[in-house]
Image (cartoon, rainbow, N blue to C red; front, top):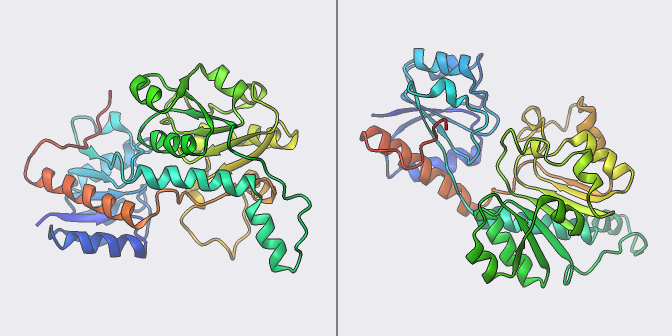
Length: 332
């Protein structure tokens, strides 16, 4: 029987994976700890480690996994920038979940847009205190406005469909654009500089690579429309947070909806409500009334959780049967 060491396990993970594993019968051991050099001994005797976005899977950890007999790293997420693929190459297999529910993330991006635009959180806090005044709550019609989508993968395409339905003009930038899709939904493919200059709302849906790290910075913000709304449901390090805060302070950026944060691993998915936040940048973001910051939850729907469990366990099954791994990640 294949043994799986499941790191960073939450109650909802156990429910979802146990239900799906009834059809597979793997021996899954759940650990609340993140995978890192200190916790890697927990994987001893396991064939597979199952990890999430905050795991530290560098060369040193991979060396220890291999010493402990682990043969497969199964990421239950799409991103794999936390795994040293160079250290893994030819030594240990790596798989991921390339798409769990593009609808979930696209719909959440729209939720952030609407919440920011119509000042939903501020309004709810006011009415709970008996304040029913409208001053300071004015938004804008999204109909007729311009949305700029950076990256045009599966999630971005679902978002484009929604925004097209809103009657928005949609611009997109992608290194390898799907021109047929763009034509179908009246998407105008443009350069990044054009997208920055013309968009009322910018939403990030590109992978995190050396080229896209800190894509949003002081220089790119300076090219944007004054008052632009920036949405990030992708990767935290697509944005230089310090420079975003400066853009918000000077009102060059009107608002920001962030489901990810560049230093999120020390905070996200944990209850830190009884502790002082000692990350000054994060603390400043949380104080800003025109920022909505959530804990990397865009993916978090019942459908997505089922798809994550199903895809991950199917990859482990392929591995156990010696079949080619459909969702393998290898160093390019």
